[in-house]
Image (tube, rainbow, N blue to C red; front, side):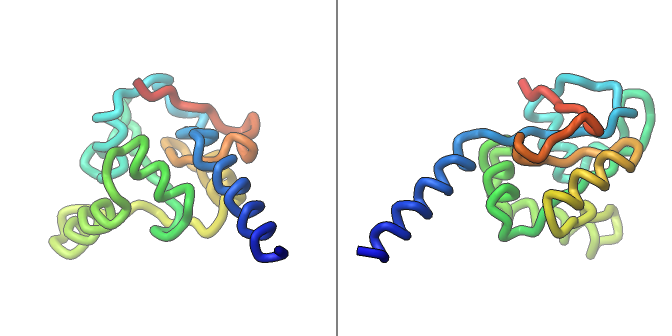
Length: 138
C-alpha cells in the first residue's frame, strides 16, 4: 500500500514538471526576444556563437542526466541529450569549438544567466525571477 502511494505521488510530481512549465531564459543584455527553434538548436549545439548585435553567446546547461535538460533537449531542440553531448565533444576534441558551461543546479543557472552578458539557459517557470528575460521560441 505504501509503495503504491509513493509511486503514485512520484508520478504526479513528474507530470507537473514534464508538461512544459519551463522556459528558455536570457540575460537582460540580450536584445532578442523571439527565436526560431532552428536558431535555438544552433545556439545550444554551439554552432551559432554571437547574437545579432555581435555579442558573444554564453550557453549554460544542466548535467546530461538532469530531468529539465532532457526535456529541453527533446522538446525545444528536437535532439536527445546524448546527441548534444556528442556534438559538444566533437567540437572540443577537434579544437574547433567549446562545450557549453555546465551548472549544477537551477539556482546556479539563474545566477549565472542573470550575471553573464549574452547568456542563455533554461529553467522551470517556478525558478524564474525578474533578473532574467524569457525568450519566445517559434
